[in-house]
Length: 169
Length: 169
DNA sequence: CAAGATACGTCAGCCTTGTTGACATTCCAA
DNA sequence: TTGGAATGTCAACAAGGCTGACGTATCTTG
Image (cartoon, rainbow over all chains, first blue to last red; front, top):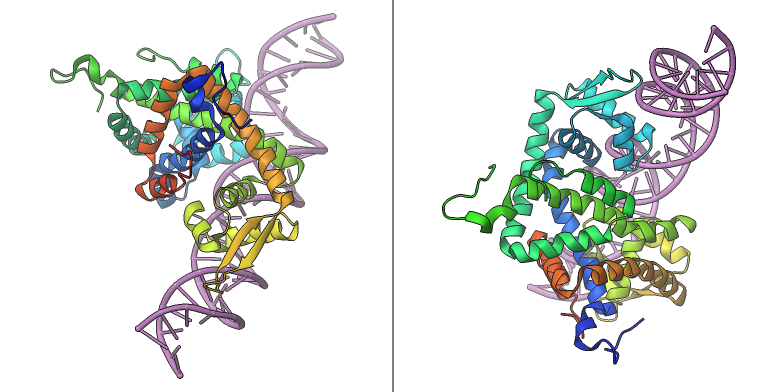
């Protein structure tokens, strides 16, 4: 567990010490706070929460996605998601269209109003991300992405990779 | 906003496109889920939540820390933290010692039982982090840390850097 | 065509963890 | 001695998770 550089490893494994890992864990914790801080402020003004942000984000990213697919991605129960979606539809940010091929499905789309809020949120979040990327540099960004990807559950990695559109990576 | 490589930037700024930033945002989202998944399972068995994990972690990391300091780090209200601490003390995982210099302060320590749970949680989380680090390699880990650090609020970065003990980075 | 499976919505009730506001206690420091 | 700091605690509330149960279209399959 507590590593001294073994005969096989030497300097090359120092980044796997418990202490380094602890720092990584705390870095994730503190960084995630920063990551959500700016959108949270905007959301609070309008009486929405992170759950609404997540729904808006993934509908924006994959317009026409179904409720079931969203459930998969977000990993919450349909009751929980439904409460959020209902509110977004009542408020006219999201619109559900009956599927043409399978009429049981509801295909979700943002309205202009929904797109506007989503943009405000993602602009704020992207600004922070952009600043961090710029400060760290392209090399660091590549490493950042590699570690995050390796940290995901395989099923989540599938969803993540599935989001490559034109211009993805 | 939507960048084409400008005359000044060229290839070097492609990592700052909106699409790259969106992928970074989703990577954070999906990775954080993986990051908390293993401890969450252990916590659920014992009817604790993430809030308890966070408290245990930061008490373990800085034994003797005060309630006020913990409030600072965790960024929640004292009522919220108090509920969690009370439960941990009732269950005999955490012990509060009256300060010797300033007797208003409570210095928090883990009991053996608390240390045991904290270790189980952090072992699980470290295992995942170690696997990710190993898969990505030392170079990537360095980048990972740089980006996360740049993403923190300055005040959180202070707390983060303050946690360097012997062997930190 | 009938029966079962699927996609979705919804009601009811519960829990954790966050919030605000108010107030008490204890103790340090000027 | 008095003001303010550090802490604890009560009450009430909200967001957003959860489970369980049930209803209704709609599709699919035997």
